[in-house]
Image (tube, rainbow, N blue to C red):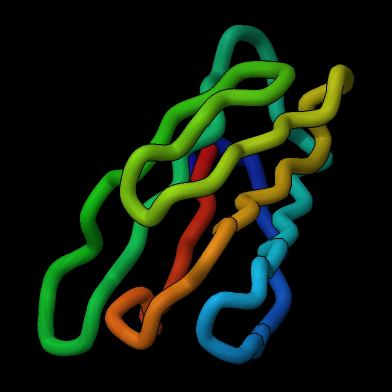
Length: 95
């Protein structure tokens, strides 16, 4: 997080291979022009930036899906369209 912005995420989420999944993030204290960032951390690797958003919907190329940021920017959802076994990771949102 940047400054005093706080983020909250679910502790875990599960799906079966090929079944889309939504990962929710709450960032109620977002201020100004701060962007919402999402990262993916695969096992034994450093976190890797996957998408940045401000408001609205934005395609995510890898893993294929979409980032949706609420109009008030207090929450966002990372949707992974057809997760594969290799997409199993820790997903982080940040402000």
